Length: 183
Image (cartoon, rainbow, N blue to C red; front, side):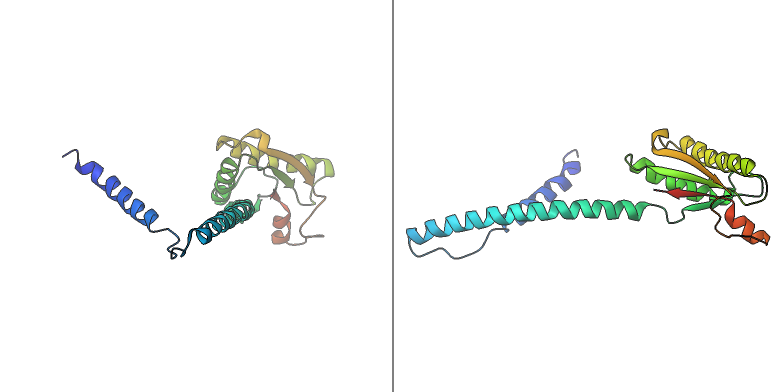
């Protein structure tokens, strides 16, 4: 019965060998040897050039596809929000943070800046510290998920870069209390 576990790999190998054998040029043979020699040289030169060009082209495409694939893997949500005067992460953003953690782990060369922000209530110094605490909170969470500290940097802008200037409503203030992911 041990032969049964090897039957699928052997069948697959046989099919692949058959397909590879069918991949020939399938052309007709030339009438004389001189023509055959010229044709063989042309084919060899042509194949070599095509292979080289295709190799370079596919390498460039692979690089471009690699960057596109990295961008495609990057989470779409690049901002998480905080409650008033708080730096603890709201549970609704755990999935977003887990997505960023997975992206950073899959791309060890990727770097992210965690920009901490606050609304304009409070002193500038207090808001700078609050923005930093928010950024550090996100960094700590990502570190616990296995992201390397070398991939992350925390910067606080406090109230200096609001999304909504001169916010009046609670909703407007809430848009300014955030951490943004900048890759």
